[in-house]
Length: 96
Image (cartoon, rainbow, N blue to C red; front, side, top):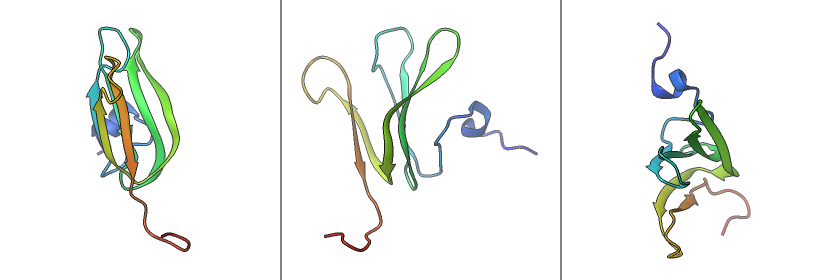
């Protein structure tokens, strides 16, 4: 039987197990946006919104290395939600 999880069913690119996901009103309109970070992988940070005809993806950051921390808040006080993502990559040569 094919997988029926939301990632496979809805074709959300970059979705992996352990990912960070949030829902919030990032852009004006009737629909909230879904923000997805790479979690236990390297991948893009994407925001998905509905334009009335279907779901559209917008890449916010091309490459996030194990994006485990994901928050939405009005960090700069301008009245609009901002996206905060922090990386947690495995240590390697040259890391301090």
